[in-house]
Length: 340
Image 1 (spheres, rainbow, N blue to C red):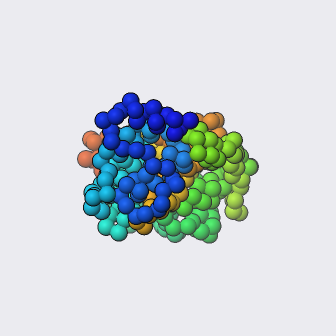
Image 2: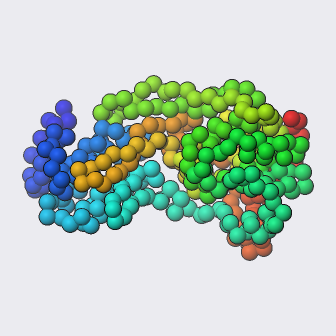
Image 3: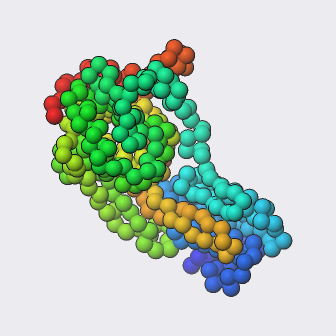
């Protein structure tokens, strides 16, 4: 049916002197073959065509006239990068020996709602404590934890030390603003220190065929208690648009817990696991081929809205105040005390 569709379109658009090549190409390393291979792999494997309402066939006919075998590597790289940008996806990248392409619109079009210098100077100061990637401090019986990246695996000993240090506090602020992801296991490892029992936290759908809507049934994901202690007090997770990928998963998992409040801005999203592919010329690219749904069925690809929206005030920033941290401190101080 798709071949018939292309034939009809080609006749209807005779001005386009191009012809769709299928994967049965001879594999010769030419710009045309590399373009065709990339388009076809994405067509068969990308997760979010339907969700994002992307007409991938239309994009083919838009970009194919720009491709010929006289293109330089730089010219081909730019065209392929432009085509990938149409997916509007931070998990879509092209890697060559001379450059990489990526989409940053998931955060660059929005207010940052975070200032690292403000955090370091006015909140962490010089008397904070660290365990692995965790920066911790206590503000008037409220624990504060900042982790800016999941790029390194989280050790059980580190997160257990954090929980032990903050166990008797009135509440914990867990700040993951500007954490754009890393190891996918991070969310489960941390959430396991805050859940009282095995809980459903999300569903994963895997591509199961070449059709844009060919997925497995939703596969449930659970997180249960981990470590020696679970913190049952009030918890506020701070988010902004640069929260992405594995950190988006962490926010999703924590949002399933009844004693956790998500505060700040909508996360950046990134609800699909990227897979790598290689072109005939050795360039690699990656695209998501899974889809993540929240425990209530909400698709988290474009971000998770907070329970309480708070944005960093420019006036507060000038006065050395983090509006979002202050709102979290106030929220915990006014909430009923929850005992561990």
